[in-house]
Structures are given as structure tokens and as C-alpha cells.
Amino acid sequence: MKQPCLLILSFLIVCIPAYAQKKKPSGFENRMSGLAVTVDAGLLIPNSKQAAFYRGTPDCPNTINRVLLSQQYGTAIWNSLVNQGLISPSAIPSYHSFQIAEYGKMAYKLSYQIGVGIRYDYPSGWGWLLRFDFSQLTAASQFLLSSTNGTGILGRNQYVACDIYGQEKRIFIDLGIAKRIPLSNKFDLEFDLGFDLNNTKVSKHAINVGGKSYSILDVWNGASPDVGTGTIPYINQGGIGIGGFGTLALGYLFNGAGIDLGYSAYFTQTKYKGFNDNDCFALQHVVFLRFCLNNFSFFSK
Image 1 (spheres, helix red, strand yellow):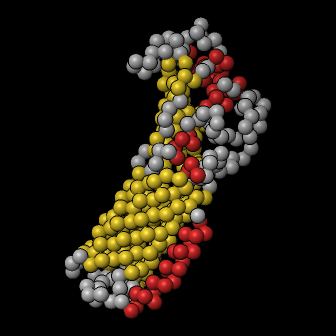
Image 2: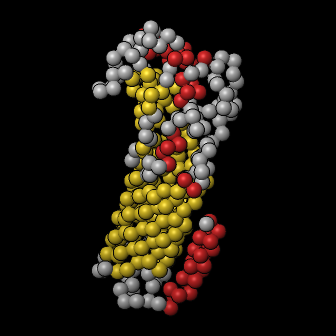
Image 3: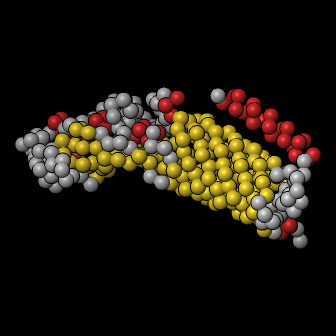
């Protein structure tokens, strides 16, 4: 999928300049043209399908049981829960008796997205763009730990609710074509279409049991982190994914610059260790405000 998309997009970017110079429709005589620098900030609405990586189930790279049932952490967790009266020693005599009754359904929280880029607009309203964006996402949920002392969340008095969360950083690189349509003297309607390359870095994955956090990132090469078990340097569990995007924006022009309010839909592959590549494709949404600077006269004396 990656090579055909790049080939088609490269062909369009090469062909547009020649076509655009010949076409100069009415309404573009005084519009922005040439090179522009862009700065954008927006709200990223990620797809929870990809957050399943952080559930902590036995089929995931980072499992809750690896830490919960380990000698190194299990005893500390058991002591903490007993001291807080969250479990009964008679019902759960040691950490070996811990049991996860229910895994939570992970979901991403709304996140910011910020970025910079360049674009080139031709007098015809066609153009191309290259954009770099950054976002930090947090996925969160709860899992239920077995308990018999009547405490926990309302309606499920045989369990202790524990938090689980993961955090990742994403970098997006967008290459695309743009078409501006004049609506009035000051307003444009813009359509963008292009190719997306993204890189994901998993930076945190932890559980919170009894008010204390424990990292479950696998730095033990799949082994149980018992006393004496060595660790290895953490290797990023994310990766490079591909996809595409489409954008609709309303632009306001003033003095060689512009402000765009827009919406982008991304169908992207976000790669994670141990996840099927095809299962990592999902639809995501971005609502953004973008500032375009086309007049560089302030650099001159």
C-alpha cells in the first residue's frame, strides 16, 4: 500500500505545477501564492481500537500478571492491600492467590496535536503541502482484582478496582495536495488529500493498585521479575505506520497571511509490538486551527 500511494502522490505533485500555471480562474488574482510556512494546533480524537495494546492481557507484550504474580512486586502489592483493608488475609493468603476477574476496555483520552509545515500555492488555487505534527496520547481503563471483604466499586463488592494506563508519543508526517476555492474576497474553502507516515513510541505502561503505581513495561525479556531477575534496556514497542488523510478547512485571508479552521480524517496504521499490522488500521479525527504566513517582507530592512 505504501509504494502505490507514494507513487500516485509524487506524480500529482510533479504534474500540478505545470497545470496550475496555465489555469488562473477568476477570484484568485489577489489570493496567497508561493511558499508559506504553517503552524497548527488542534484536538486529536484517536481510535480506541488501537488502545487495546494496553489492556495487559496474557497475549500482550506487557502483562498485568507478570508483575502482579511476581515475587518482587507481588508481596509489596499484597501487603499494601492488606494494610489498607482492601483484601482479607484469610481470603487471599498471599500474592499467589491474586486473580484478575475482568480486564477493562482501554480507551484513549482526547489529546492535543501541534505542528509546523510548509506549503506552496499556485495562482490557480492548487498547491502541495508538507506537515510535521506531534501528539502525546494516554490510554486508560480499570481491571478488577479478586477480593472477598466487601469493598470495591458499587455493585461489584467482591472486587477491588485498579487503574491501568499507557502513554505514547506520535509523530505524523503528512505529504499532500491542496485545492483552494474562493468563497468571497476574504474567505476560501480548502480540500487536502495525501499520504501519512507516523512513528509511535510507547513511553509508559503501568497499573495502579491500592494507590501505588507499578510499571508493567517488559524489561525482563518475558520472564517473571522475581528477586534476582535482571533487566534489559527498554526497546520501544511502537513502530512506523502508514496511512492517508483528507482535510476540509475554511480559510480567512489577510495581508499575506491566513487562518484556517478545519477538520482532518486519518485512516492510519499505528504499529505496536505483537499486533497484527492489518488490525492496527483505524480512523482518527483532528479538529485544528492553522496559521499560514505567506508574506516574508518583515525579513527585509
